[in-house]
Length: 263
Image (cartoon, rainbow, N blue to C red):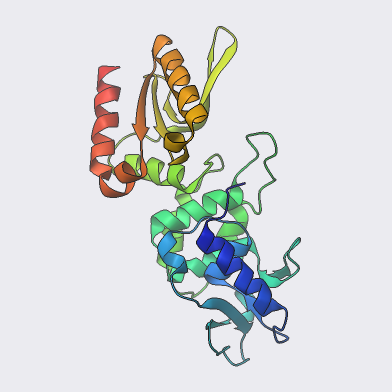
């Protein structure tokens, strides 16, 4: 599971404190529900002290210091008790649908990818919901319905992080074929590596290097050995950082396009 950021941990802590005296009929929604489910949000989503708190119509919208109140239509709203935190909140699929009012398509896809992610590595939890659940939640006259419907066909079950999702969407939006996700590269019957994104026919891999790759000496050493082994097997590895992905997406597309053409 992804490690919560300081902002996510602080937000979850304030939500749990509020829940201790939460009035009957209230529940967490939008970004707060998303954080409590452990789903990825852009850093900008948690700026400010407000908790997202909802009620079902015709109850009055919650108000108060540190609260962003929302009122939901009962017919299209599903509420549950969080299995470990014990607080009322929107189900994962409904929480995702509520984000259509505030997020763009790429971040909607990233949250949805995290919800439907199938276990790929040891210790991975089961999916929180299915793509069909997301489809059922994104119906009716809701704010952001067009963005939800645009995001839904792009949701995949094998994306391991928000940045992997963004990288895949950057490549697709740049006109490149859709890559395989978390692709196992096997050479002579031995697993050489599981790469973030792959074009197996051309033997081109795209790897996102988070900041821990730069500050963890052991990780850096493993990365070097891994990429040398991939090169020896005929693979080209395009390494992408946060700066590349969010400030120079066109450059990422160009690098991958050149590698595909050469291979």
